[in-house]
Picture (tube, one colour):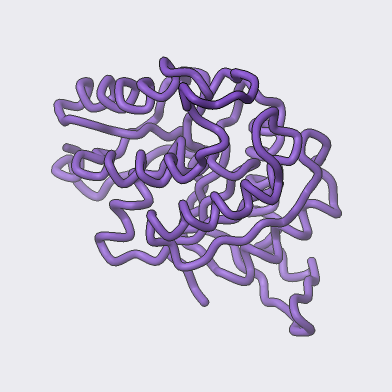
Length: 238
């Protein structure tokens, strides 16, 4: 299956939190999208890997993605080496995305920066035909995405461009609320984490609102790039 967009996240819920509204919009516009999680988030303070497996599957249905896979790397301890790069390359060659979305280049959680560089490096290496990979007994052909964009997570990194997601924030929030074990619940008896507070839940809206304010729309999500942003015409900018 060929996808237009493949979004990678170090943990289940990374993609939904950071670019869920963008994915929902692109899918509505007719583009095929998928998600690959690098880990099961098994070191998370709240919930379990099994619970998060179920939650991520439900969230994927809300967003409307074509596929969701989990590479089951070790949460907290995966590294950017040949072994891990090859597994990511297999996913890139399997789905042949034109656009790859991946973790923030720098963030509070160490897996986010690691995941960002790992996926970015794998996108380049995937285009080298002398790197051989096999999936389900079939030799894969080289494939390099046209674009690699990094979404923004905990830290307020200045975006290189933003996407107007007005009308899609509710879908994003609905997908996130499938992660019942992870986010704010006043009745929960589990330990409070930085993302399990009322303030964080509210920030999903107000951070998107602030980016929207800056481009004169209601909501927006931001991304950073690895090369110049190019347009065919000044009229392409909103």
